[in-house]
Length: 167
Image 1 (cartoon, one colour):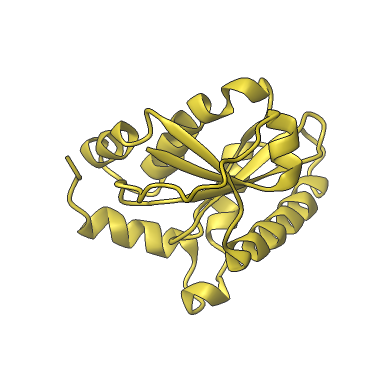
Image 2 (cartoon, rainbow, N blue to C red):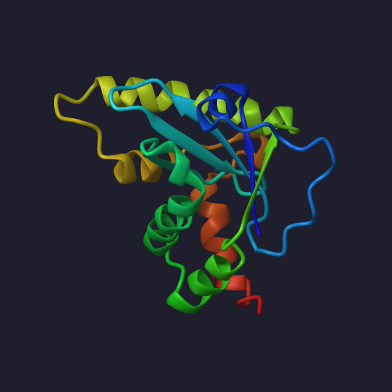
């Protein structure tokens, strides 16, 4: 099951009231995801993995299908980071259903804010509309203090080499 912890801004866009009871334990290799909305034109969602801090940027619209569209956007990013098809498929199997909750990890929210700032700066340096996949890959190369200054890309590639597909 996909566990998507959303900021208040994104919860308001989704029109979703998060449950008060705790979420179940994620069975996927990557675990929980955090997400916020970026008020660009068009609006964009920035998702960050709780354990690896891997960023994934994707269009917000249509907002009602965001949980259903996220696995496909994630699969594209994982493939670019060297995950093989079997591992990606195993991860996607765990994302058929989605639980939405409010944010619970301030460290990850801080990383969301930092990535949102960097993405905005890099987007403004370009004359063309932003390539969200390219921005996701560029953000993944940023060293992060919570990862002891590893980058999310390094952590995800290490998982690609070590993790066996969960069944």
